[in-house]
Length: 406
Image 1 (tube, helix red, strand yellow):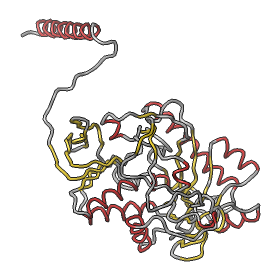
Image 2 (cartoon, rainbow, N blue to C red):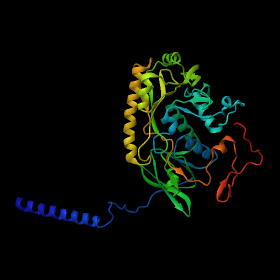
Image 3 (cartoon, rainbow, N blue to C red):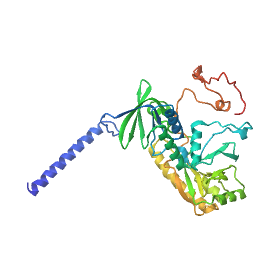
Image 4 (cartoon, rainbow, N blue to C red):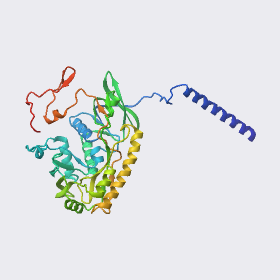
C-alpha cells in the first residue's frame, strides 16, 4: 500500500467511526432525556458472616466488639482507613459517661460502662485520655470531660477489634442492600479489591447517614436543620498562657482539670471565646472554640460551622461546602495567631477529612423517643403498644412512672 492509499484508508476508517458515533448518539437521543449507561450483569464473590456492622464510628466499634465477644462471626465495613468516626474527626471528647448529678443535685452515677469504659481504660494506659475530668463549670451540658487523643483512639479501637476477631473491611464503601421479602439478607460493598456481596444473619446500621437502612428501602427524610462543621487542631500553643489570659479577661464558662501530658490537675477543657474583634470575626466564619486537649501545647477542637445550602447527601452541594469550610478554618487559625496570647506561632496540625454532620437521613421508625421519655427515664417494652394508630411507650412494670429529675 502506497502513502496515498494509506491516507485514503485512514480517512474512510475515520468516517466510518464518526458514522458509528453519530448513530449511537442518535439512539441515545431517542431514549431517556438523561443519558444513562447500563452496567453489564456480573457474578460477585460472596462472604458469609453472622453479623455485619456498617460504619466504624464509636457506635459501630462498640456494636462490632459486642457481637464478636459473644462468639458471632463479625464484619465491620468502614469507608475510611480507620475507626472512630466523629470522635476522631470532630477531635473533641467522648460524652455522657455520667449523669448530670451536679446540675440536678442527685447522686453521682456512671451511666455508660462496659465496652466504652474499656476503651477509655485502654486509652488511659497509653496516655491518650484525660480521664473522666469533672466539669467545675458548664456541668449543665456534660458532667465530665473525657477528652481523647484522636490518633491513639484510632489505634486502640482497631487493636481491640483485631483482638476480638472482627473482620475489618476498611477503605470499603457500602453501595447497596440485598433485600428479600422485606428483610435484609446481604449488602454490596466495594473496595480496590473489587465488588462483593456479604450475607449475614443480622445487620447493624451505624452509618451517620443511615445508608444501609436507605439502601434497604426504609422511608427517610433529610431535614438539613443543623449546621455541619469541620474542626482544626492547633499546635505550638502555650496553653497555660492562653488560659491565664482568658481568666483575666472574664473567665471561661466551662472548665475541667484532668490528665494532660501525663500530669494530673491540668486544664483539659475550657471555653476559648474572647470578646472584641476576635469574637466579631469569629462569628463571621461560624467559629466556636470549646478547647479540649490531652497534650501540652496543643488545642484539639476549634470548630467552624456552616449551614450547607441544598442537601447534606448531595455530592455537589457538599463539595462546595467543603471548600467554604476549609477557607473558614484557615481564617480561624489566623484569628488565633492575631488575637490570642500564646498562639502567635500556632499552626493547623489536624483537620477532619470531611465535614461532620449533626443529622443526615432521619429513618422513619415505629416509634420516635420523645423529650418526655428521656426526662422521665421511661423504659420501652419489647413490643410497642398502639392506641388509635399512635404508638404509645410502654412502662416497665417494675419501675413506677415518675417526673423526678434524672
